[in-house]
Image (tube, rainbow, N blue to C red; front, side):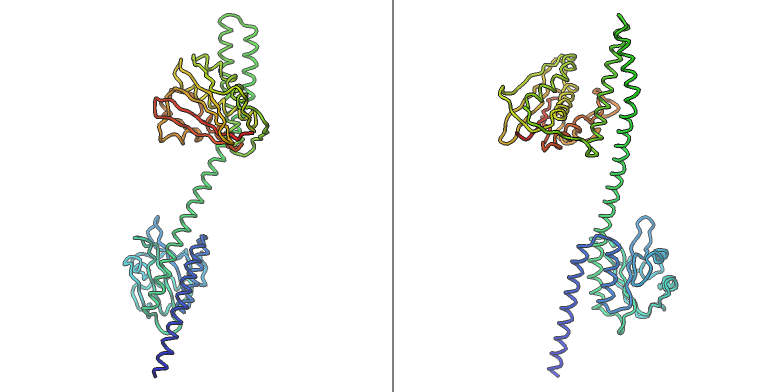
Length: 417
């Protein structure tokens, strides 16, 4: 007898060890699987195997329509199962879910809570049933059931095993749901961005033809007109030039978003780039009596960059500084060598940027001012374009400010040639 007892104990230990290994394997598998349908199949198959029963099923709670529904079951069509609504009252699964307690029934059909519609629908006779809640933190997400134990009835040991599986399953299902929700949100964002990009491309293309006609007629009138008529023609030309600049910005943003912007890098001095940029905006700066101050050494500092695109990026920074600077103030344009990089900057004495908004100013269409009470013009994409152009060439840009009313500095780090 003692020998038999020891043999029995050894077999029991071997059985527990094997069960523990399978549970560990299940945990690893569930944590590495994020496809919800695949997860559900793994859970039901493992529960059926470890509890030595004919089938297992998973019922999940529907938050939008308070009820349980079959998400998966061994050997059953998921779409047919999903057609079966399981009430929270007067059903075994509903009782397990509401009480958050496991339930063993070795003769479920005699229980008034047995929901016979399920058995009738899938043509499956239920002789014994074990159900446990699927908890995650303080919430229950569903019920895991095992059906028809092959040898006798379900035991407390089966309850412990199925409860462990249910706990791991609840976490894995929640993670898969979160991933699915995140992917859906990202797809929606991508779709919205695509619509926006298509609109920008279409608008910038379609508006160029009528704008070209306006500029042509305004130029003709300017050449022929005298006195007050000439002034009117000049105003039309100025407005048309501003509109063309906006269209160019819209087109550049579209090219950056679709990765169609071509970069033709060459060795050029940062001084030349900044001088080109200043030449383009000095007229607008003069109209607001702004003083442009250079803070650069005479010896050239060479970078590898696309001259046209890099000049455009600095033009956008300078236009931003001009727009938000008070009349009669100064804008400082500087550059200096720093190890393998060249640091350039545009500093103004304007309205400044709140510290918590420093990173947001580079977002598309972002405006510090509320849209209904704006005092400054612009689409809010100039800084976005500048950031995209610098980063496309391996550079970096960031904003610094001591707060509202204290000016701002936009710094750019570019690769030295």
